[in-house]
Image (cartoon, helix red, strand yellow):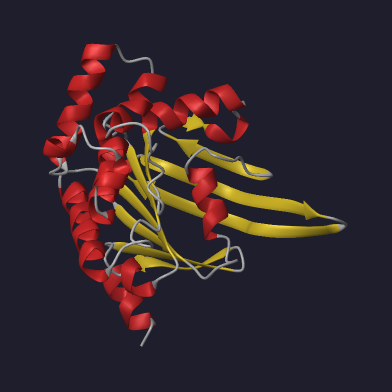
Length: 239
């Protein structure tokens, strides 16, 4: 079967329940979602909607209380912590709002980190990290520490780190949240470019205008999907 028609991500009847004192809180309430290779999907919702919980499940940072999460044909929902860590290291590239760069390491060392955890040898690791920095346009800053760079350059470094291991999925959590409007535009354009190159991008955001940069929008409300369709259809639904 054509790889494009087999879901990269398949969430099947996902529930996530948290216990807060004597109260059960349902963060996700029967989520069903398929995302295919090469898609650019925004998952949008207000604070408390359940979108962050879905992001944690998609990113193998958490497992559902009930239901199945199939990633590249593997049932992630039944994995133990060490297996989840391997999925994160080898399959998913994370881009966070706060960059999560280590202050005492230079940019090359920061980008190398996930490759180090994945067991890549030193010379190959360095080669892959430099290629990723080249790809995001800051190879000349490889020796700089994060505090010597602008916010936009640090986020590019974060993107390079996400790309270094050639992941199947790029998961971007509010990647423009800490940036000014001009730098946000640059980051969004770069995510679009990555998608045009064939990368699967899932963007998590609370901001409708950011969500509209994707090709497909999934809106979460009260732990459920209330919209899933092409961005043009989403824009019309918001009028």
